[in-house]
Image 1 (cartoon, rainbow, N blue to C red):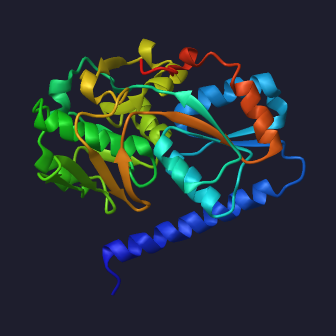
Image 2 (tube, one colour):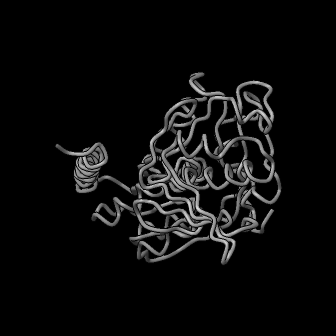
Length: 289
């Protein structure tokens, strides 16, 4: 009999194969225009560039950063790819790279909660194996649990089927998240867009979100936006070294730094338009805040 983990791995592989086939079919259709894969956080930036380029000839698709890398590795290559995590560049080979700058991690809640309430509210979490916001949220949770005592890491580890290991030799923290699965007061979705739908629908009380995503969704006027402690906003590298061990391999969790890359001449032209955008309008900074 197959173990639960083996069965889930097979199901995930089948889903990835079907998704790749679907994107391959779309990418081989004639006259498709410029295809853009954009992380949910960067959809506002992608659409802004599409408006300058000519939106009728641009197909912008919301794809989580890790999922986008996997599709590209499988041969489903768009003209342009926008990601929230600079560390993912090592997995692809683009023609051109455009630095989109830095941004912040924030907590978004439906009611008048504070960071001290994280120990009992219902939390929405993105899958760290599919979205960088997932493993960054886990790093933030570790810091909030150890330094600020906002929640209990034992509960987090049990509810999310992850393991935090503190390496005393170099003071690093390893987050083993390959078997991630949400239970209890935690609910998971594949990416930030899916987690946001939980918040908007009232299924969870709070989520972690990037500043550009909050701007693009207009959350400041709808929900309570809670500032994270300065050292864990990811405007700069976190105070300790975090390594997330995901299905894609180990990834060091460093400062937020988004990028856009092109794979075709049409993609190069699209990046030219993107360079004309005021990124601060979308919650991004060329400097470190």
